[in-house]
Image 1 (cartoon, rainbow over the protein chains, first blue to last red):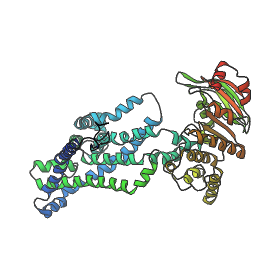
Image 2 (tube, each protein chain N blue to C red; image 1 turned 135 degrees about the horizontal axis):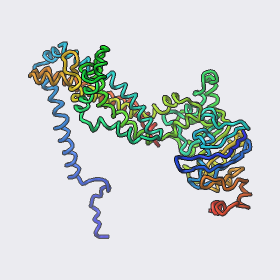
Image 3 (tube, rainbow over the protein chains, first blue to last red; image 1 turned 60 degrees about the horizontal axis):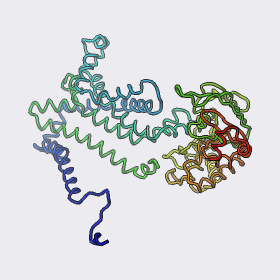
Image 4 (tube, rainbow over the protein chains, first blue to last red; image 1 turned 120 degrees about the vertical axis):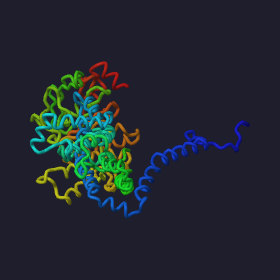
Length: 288
Length: 239
């Protein structure tokens, strides 16, 4: 018994030694500061370098306004469409078993593994004026490439997996019993979807939609190839930021960048607010 | 309601879950489908409820062919193994779900729905839990809420998949009597699936012993105990 000294401090098995804890925390804080926080602060700092007036003047510029409008328009198309596709794909994959399911899962993941630039090129090659589809579309007065539809398509391609990928694990975990119960109680398929499936996946769906939205507004590579970068017409915010920066209009570039960052921060704040507001409901509906 | 299972078989891909089985269930009976896992008992229950469709064979309700009826048309009160309560709804909303899902023409007014839910909460002897969420209930309370929810649609039969499976031994005993009482009050043809031979023998009027997708024996508990039809049945009920 003498080898156990009463003064020795015991700690739970899953807790690290103090020095290890402090080192880990410092490392994480340092990485966050250098990689995330510092660039974000720099964006706002650079935007306001010549005062608020100069920044606001940038926002009043028609070119910037058109870029902001276009980015919001693209997100307004791409996000809802991807939300619907994502829910449908996740539903199909998790609630049914069918031939070719593995292929479908792989297809959904393609945008994660394919470079956005390649995706943009594919769209140009498929729908550009040199392809028969493209020339037909141009003849109908509906050009896709170097126009808004192409930008929406490129954004949708890049953001396609976000909603489905968020939903699939949640729906797998929930299984089919809830839906089956609702069916035995006489509910129609649509009623089951809106009263049982959707409420069960709403947080994952919200998270997927927010990620999808952030990426849709920020996408550069694929859009750069497809859009043709026509000022005031097909230049989205990220494209305009790059063009302004290359022209040494750094205040204008950073101001637009700050607006884009703010949009992202607003979505993040929105998500946090919703989580906080519905914290009790979240806890109540968590799996027992 | 009298239920007739006529040469039902079910295959999942190449594996046979049910080799043709036939069974006649008298109206108002309390029946146990007893067997080890993989014996096809849950598949048979799900076929009766319209959640699976047989590869071949017919199901007759009161003599009328019900094989092609959809799950909604069957009006079977179904209690799932883990109860499948709607976690985002209160107990009241869970029980009211089936009534609110009815088409407008047959849907009772909300005061009538409230009255029926209250009556069902009394029936399961949990009158005060209407405002709670499922995760605030004990396992036994959840099981009874699931039962009330299934009864709310005025079902033609009651189907229960391992209704006591997720409960500890003491609660199990209490709820067995609870199910017996509800069966006797409502007079519904009730079929439950179990792998627990004590449960089947104690509770059911009629026990159907199943193994490997076949029905080994059908009979009253005391008859099965006295005259097991095969070595499998003898081993299984003495285990």
